[in-house]
Image 1 (cartoon, rainbow, N blue to C red):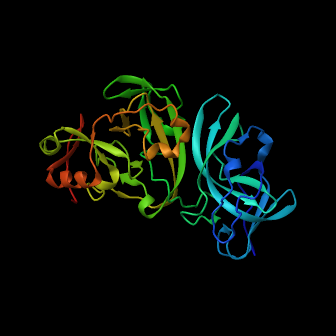
Image 2 (cartoon, rainbow, N blue to C red):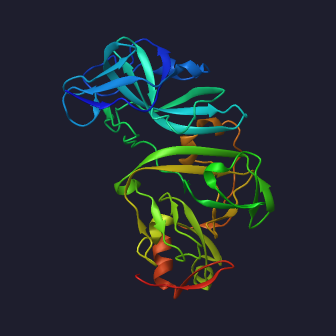
Image 3 (cartoon, rainbow, N blue to C red):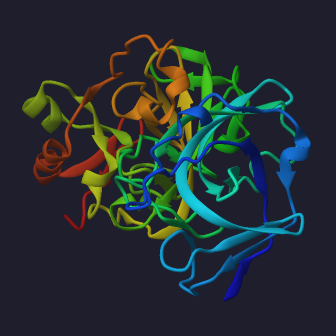
Length: 347
């Protein structure tokens, strides 16, 4: 038996009837009552607890020997895990969405994990808006403090990593500092107000690893890290010849191998999503790229957008990964609009 963690935060969501009614699998079958739960009491944040890895496998899990958590001097076994989507409303009225792991104890208590550095101890409310995976699809049967978990039924949405400098009316600002209403220069429609800022934390290994664009690889003024599905704006006469459009949006994952563009493996990555009234081209680390586009599968990550999200058209023709690969093979230079041609190497 080993203590795997006694730091960080847990958030108490309440006591519920048993979620995992079928112990023959890792899924939680009876979680409906959790959706819609609103937590508005700051005292629900638990700073003192002990997680015990009973079977010494390096994670807190429900398989093998049942691991335990001790809160307020009471030790209970963990019965089941799930990934939940939270809508956090800050005191100033701004909101963000994040995916985290929750677990239920054998006494019915439910705790939400990995909120450290996100709510900063002050919030108006936290609502559980969806249960994204209960273990049946991806085998979620455990959790490592810090956010190490895997989600298989939610494709990575187009998004920028934390630290990306977004051009604003006042100059470049780190994406994590942006708020609803900020004015952002767009390529097509001038200054536009942000309608929504979303946040997710994702596993960043294997196919989920973000794509790193080294400084200068696509005209960017500093290294740029985006999700694999995120699309960059490229300009080429060859694109017009092949697809009928001089400017096209290309998925980052299809550009790996060009100009030292590569995957970056890391335990987890914090992603931010910027939504406008329409799909826009904005500047990130000095290079043009897309804003968030609600639609399948992207909007599945943010259920609160679906009822009000009007259909949007893409700001430019969007190429598939295969089309992008074909285009890059035919291009002599890799260029983005208004940045000039760049040498095309390593293809």
